[in-house]
Length: 214
Image (cartoon, rainbow, N blue to C red):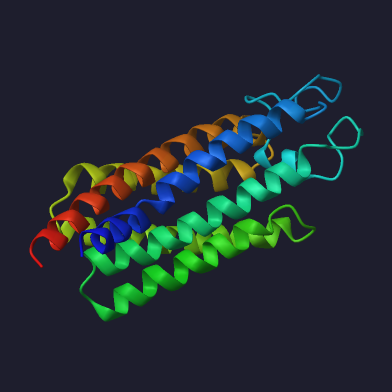
C-alpha cells in the first residue's frame, strides 16, 4: 500500500522532473549552437538575450552553418511538452470540480503542448498562435481553480504569466518591438516554468494529504 502511495506521488512530480531535464538539455543544446542572432548574424554561439529558443531547433543556425543543437533541442521540447500535458491533466484532477472546466484545462493544455512540439516546422506561425490561444485558455482555467482553492500567491503569479504571454504576442506581431522579443521570451519561459514547478510541488502536497486520509 505504501509503495503504491509513493508511486502516485512520484507520478504527480513527473512534470517537475521533465522541466528540470528540459532545462539541462536546453543549456547543452545552447552550447552546441554555432552562432548568429537577430542582433548579429555573425555572432558566435547562442546569445540568451538575442536568440530565440526556436533557433536551436532549426536545421541551420542563423549564421548559415549546420546546427548540431537541433536533435537535442527537439528532444528537450518533446520532454517539456509531455511533462506539461501531464501537469494540466493532474492539476485538473486534483483541483477542479467542474466537469466542464476539467475538460477545458485538459483539452486546451494538450492542444497547446502539441502545437509547441511543432513550432520548429514551416508552420511556426500557426503553431505559435494555437499555442498562445490554448495556453491562455488553460491558464485561465487554472487561475479560476486557484481562486476557488484560495491559493492567492499562485493565482496572482498565474495572472502575471498570462500577461507575459500577451506581451510576447504583442512584441512578435510588432515590427518596432520584435527586437525585444528574445529577452521577453526568455524571461517568460523562466517565470512560467518556475510557476509550474511551484504549483506541481503544491499538487504533490495535496496528493500526500489525500493519500493520508485514505
